Length: 309
Image 1: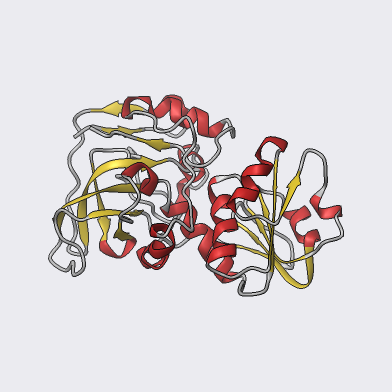
Image 2: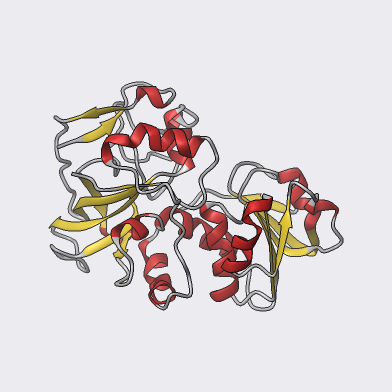
């Protein structure tokens, strides 16, 4: 099959399109998915740069975490999925601890049934591919922070892949009383359209100096020292980019298809919207360009690869 791969760690230049990669074998608890669309995530390039090579699978590596596609083969222990099912998910249960050697930037990928969910009927494969890692990260962080009805949240980088879902989940699923978010000037209206009550322009104001303090500050950009200054007396800060001082904690996503299944009704009703970057989708032969664009930090929403041959 065709697949993107790299034999050494480094910049986008180490990525090569191969045509002779073996279709992965499936274990008893896995299904084989014909990949229709795949989304890129910052964790992909951190991995490719060797940031967690000590816990990575062996080279050569086919990158990619997020998939949307069609089940073409099922393992003997698979209960809930069958051939022909349209599915989506993040194929790596632990993002930095032994992610799969054969990822989603390929014609086929093997993935455990428990990491997948049936694709929402109203979304196409491009939109579905843009969801799993980002929306599961948004959900798990809010859950771990004890977020719930009547609480307030400040989202740092509300227009990003994860941030756009934190705003919407806080508002529509968790019942937030107040959602504030930061972005650059041009994206303030976007924050409001996603459900933010307060949109803060980080080019003009320091959010940590403003009088309002929050039950949860969700740092989706990497400003831990500032994030904890916006927390109220009983609140917490959550970081997905690395260590954070108290009263903060950081976590790495555990992929779980049941979160997607739980959120499907909100997606199918249109309450939660998927943000695909306007430049997406990039075709399969333009994966290098897509990563270069993602790594420039200019994307709004998710960068998706489609069609995959």
